Length: 234
Image 1 (cartoon, rainbow, N blue to C red):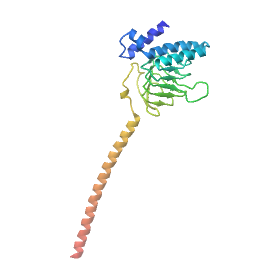
Image 2 (image 1 turned 135 degrees about the vertical axis):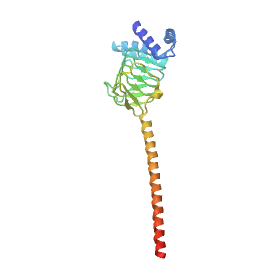
Image 3 (image 1 turned 180 degrees about the vertical axis):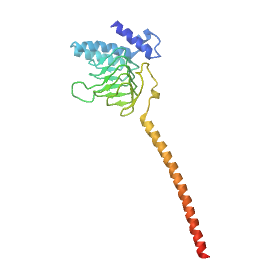
Image 4 (image 1 turned 90 degrees about the vertical axis):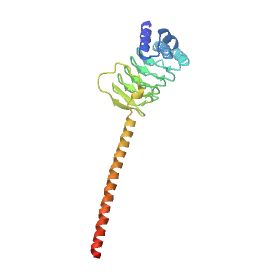
């Protein structure tokens, strides 16, 4: 237990530049407290004390603003940054070294029992306000952009952004370092709009050229008619 807490404090220091000391993390980080509450609730849940597990979970939600169902499986060195409004459902599975920002929902899309919440691979980053819904899998070292709504599987080493979530593949080795520059995430919708503007600009240029050629042809045609009229008059 103490080894796990030590690993989680170390992970927070690595992922949060605002963390200045161990005592500050222990006293002031709601995400850290939420995971402690969840470890206890999960233990009670797995040993048949489901009501007590839910009661403990509700106390954790009251104190931290983070709701994690006791049945959810949370890996090691998970960091919940700020955390207010996070909801993690009963059958959700979160891998090791995952970074989750405030407002994230790992929710279900069916009322049937069984696996109905997402599986998050190791090293995944989930941006603020993102919604990952249903029995889907987010592959290892992928990133979910801020405000994305993910309804389909995301392969490993990918970035998913937008509503609904769109995958932008990333080549190369798995992401080993945490990249917090969410403003640099690719935006395929913006790229398409930019392409449409460029196409519109090129189309306008071509139409302008056609108008100019049409005017020249019209001038030549009028000049030809005037010359024929002059010859006829003579």
